[in-house]
Length: 479
Image: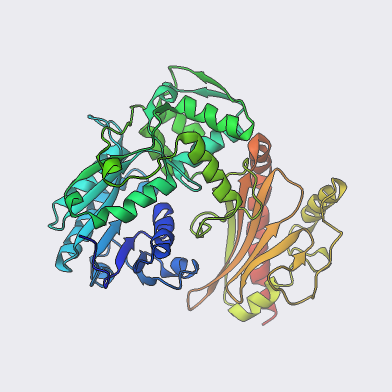
């Protein structure tokens, strides 16, 4: 029996990777969708005019009933891996709260996306995903659990770790987990399963493994991706590097958030292979092999086919290059001021006038001079207006790509550099005072992009703190 067409489907965790893509997929299918996130402002930036938007947090039970009210199918797509070592306890509490609220609101079905697990999972990440499914099933609402391994699609954490390793390291000394086997699945195939499974009543109460047709070691995955982008990584496995030790150096190599990458790496010491094809028989579709799925992921990135560009935690590259990291390395400086938001904004939008970037002017001049010498746009362009900015304006070697007056100014770096960079000024009005933040996002391209980031990081931190303080001080003096 198909779901009730008069009721919306809830995508709980709509700001996350799968949730963001699933909302767009369901809307394109003509489904009614209610998208939920802990922060509704993130959803409002997605452009989902056809979806209902709501704010809810699984750790705040009082927020859940409104999100689940009059819902047919609830997709549970949240996890807390980025929270650090305490994520299993957080995930368990969130699942209990959600299951209880879904039962109170008479939700017809919960669809939960878990992870493929071996018979005796050693990883805290895999055990937590399994426990979350058990807790949801104990709540009284029929649950269908789909278990997937690596998802091959732009923004998938496991996929982006593989890309960063191959792009950034021509020679890799790796632990034995490179010989662990996995069954990757293309994002498009997973979305089709998620969309169609609630249409089949016989899937209620079932757990399904979902995967593509290939069974590959992680070494084979890295070699195949390298062939696709013209790289031939040399991979040298050594027995002394455990997954835990490798997770520590991984933070230097990949731009995937550290806690998330560490949780994933801890699960690589065992094979995670799909063990049944029942759902593939029930919902037939062309399952993409790894090479086709990887090519599709790169093309989606190239065409900016993502429905959103990761406003939480990463600003997506405006110019595609397969060597760029999807996630960003980040640095920030901030200061607090009593000045009004309007006065701060009026000061910030004057950035770049006559080469004035507010602080450490000699360092800014030196970087612009280097860019000019290598053929970049520095010193060659002038602002359209000395005190106004709009999207598309150039500011020396930067271009305005987004702005919200008195809240946010986002500049894309167009200097010659081994990667893509974004500089963002934000004004947070807390009522009694304003916090000015200067935030840099850097998407490194290859090993040179990583070296550039780490060599300039001390200067960036110095400059951004000083810039925020200078803006605050000047705005207070101008009152």
